[in-house]
Length: 277
View: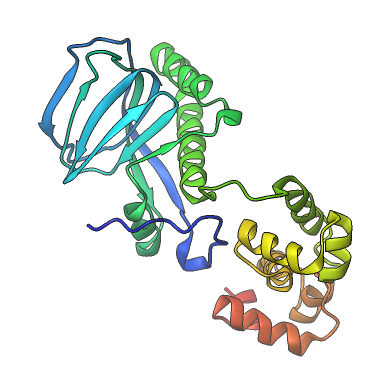
């Protein structure tokens, strides 16, 4: 499969979500650095593989791709991917590796996971080594309930990998200011904010703010606010406690007809049909 670059910071439509569960776990390993460590060309017919370089380097061949993995980087690939790898003899890597069943929830999710790159730099703020260390300890001790926690950690690690692959490759100017505005919109999704209001809060010009906001979220200000409202409305409708009119008003729409048109446009379904699922 040809792997296309993941678009950075793009808000995911329903068909693009990375929805998956963790099934059986085959192994959790930690290996110390060894200049002679290597794996001959092989594939795993059952398990999705994730590895993390604690320090040093390793040289990978996955299918027809060759690349070097260095300290702080993830490697991940699905079952049946042909691989060969050897430690860099001058800077041999120390690493964690995990084999597990990744179970995408539908064909679109399977496609999205299949398009992910094989490796990515981790986010240092997420303390990835500590998560792998906890995973290894749980796997070693196998105390009651350990599998629940192991699966939870693996889900977190896959989420971090997806985040690393979809974040902008270049820093966005004033990202901290824009992120604060995004959190504000999430907290007050029933309110309608204009670009002028938000740009003033961010102490940026309206045109500059609009450009940076879209770079960070993948959406315009209006579309992002509608995205939040429709997502909340979906939850309200599925609860069975709200009619379409009540859900529309609960998320800040006074015009139920406009809400219904927008709901269909953004979800591909009628709001009333969605409620009756």
